[in-house]
Image 1 (cartoon, rainbow, N blue to C red):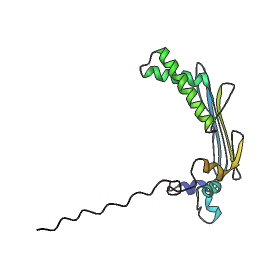
Image 2 (cartoon, rainbow, N blue to C red):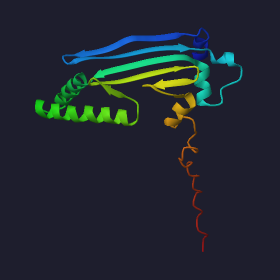
Image 3 (cartoon, helix red, strand yellow):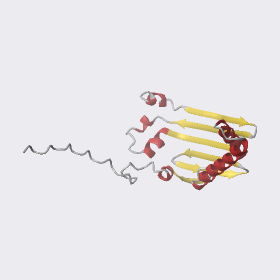
Image 4 (cartoon, rainbow, N blue to C red):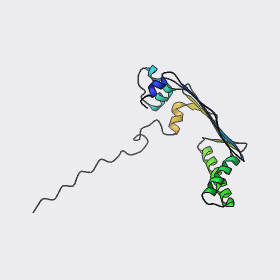
Length: 171
């Protein structure tokens, strides 16, 4: 981490295009394009997570595509490795993949279209587009409680240490 500022001086770009996983039922893909900035050029140190991100990240594009049959096949294979028979593994895989897809949609992290679980994320100029939902970086970070410190998030501070017991006076 101590060399990170040196690496950021050149405004590097990181790309993964695509990372894929195939099985007999389909192919999942993930792509990432990340353009970084030198936060030292801003002059003053960042005072918050959103300031740090806006000073360090010029642009971020990420896409994830997971066909449901492919996910179910992978999950069923994993279940069989854990000792489930083929029928049990298939039922378990269906439950787990459907549950994961529903949870992703509930939290607006994923979409379901044409039996494919997907996510599209774009960030640039302090604006986020997550699956077509546009918002500021601050709004996005607020969704995940990343702006506030632990005390501000309703997490109670750690209790003060208990004083050592005082021995009873001798009689």
